[in-house]
Length: 226
Image (cartoon, rainbow, N blue to C red):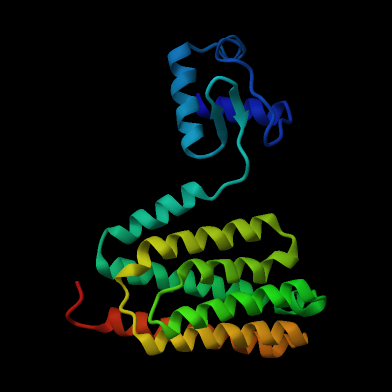
């Protein structure tokens, strides 16, 4: 039944935010019972394909990576070793995406973006100097880095990868000197964007991911980890 509702959405060329027929109308349209339609809507709502607004109706959902985040995070909870493997894979994907778009990211840097990146990197440094984690600022930095591309799917993926990272990463050991290094590496990324240096940006992105790569590698190879 869930597939039938998806086909109905496609067949009628409905867009995100468009209303679906009422439950009774869907039953008539699809020749199904109320219980079948109701259950299918619950499944599709869990996948963010539809959105149920209580008291208003059911609508075609907006693009969301919630199901992806949930699946990857669950994999990460299966074992400590799996945690590290998933983070390693996420780092590979994130690094490849950001380096791959380096030319576009420096093609027309705005002063507003440069200022925003510098402010976020400065916020990380301030927290690092106090020995505090800054995962939310880090997430905001990478979203701000990719925002000028005006690619909503890319921004959704960037945010989704960070959401998984935030759920799974607390198992990784953190040292104060690593926090300081990470903050300064973000400052280097911001500087490369500001001066329009694509090659330098790719190098800065690679350097930025190296500390966490080293930590993950050490944890995965440690014989004391399960």
